[in-house]
Length: 293
Image (cartoon, rainbow, N blue to C red):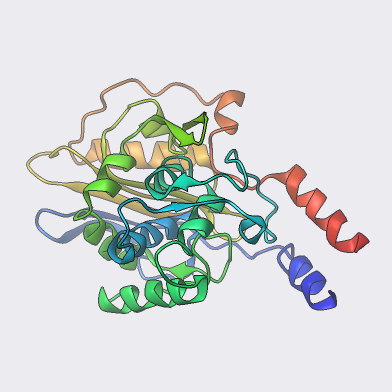
């Protein structure tokens, strides 16, 4: 219990944030258009889920795979919750949808033990895939990205984004503004964690947000349609806020010829419930639970 308590509180030590790092990449010509600190290594948060999706899709051999959210999937790192019911068989494709559209951490944990291997073996496969793709600065410690030990760089994530373009399910789910997750007799409505997709400002070929306190606000985004005859992507890490991340990505896409489909609405309090963040109430409850045991 002491080790668990110490590990929990070390997570709350303020992280010394560094400057934003980013790459604007031409995936048609395989070249960097502009960048800042592109090889800087730092936590990537839920951008991790892109690798989780790839490894799951490549190793799951059961097209009718189902899994249930259990106590094993509880977030003891940040105290996040889930809309998904516990102990209810859910199709793995629905968990994949919850993970990529709404960035559900519990769905990511359930998928990591649903592909015919243990969670530890799954994470080993994630690291093996990173090495295979030449992501030399990347390490994974969990399947959700809640751990600050999941690290990478903007240039490494260019390689992951490019590889993810070969997965039709990842591409389809990346561009869903919202979705219903079928969970037994209930359909659970969720919205995309990326405001640019949620409001259909841009169509995404690949899209994944990420946030924990240690990482800042991250985004991997590849535009679905050619921009001046090129497929353009923006990968940015350690943005100062969700709003800055959104405006920065929009500005870079427009700079290189990508046309917005809709006007971007101002950020509102309603946006906060969809933007990825850890649950502060859940975090406080987690602290109380651990200290009282």
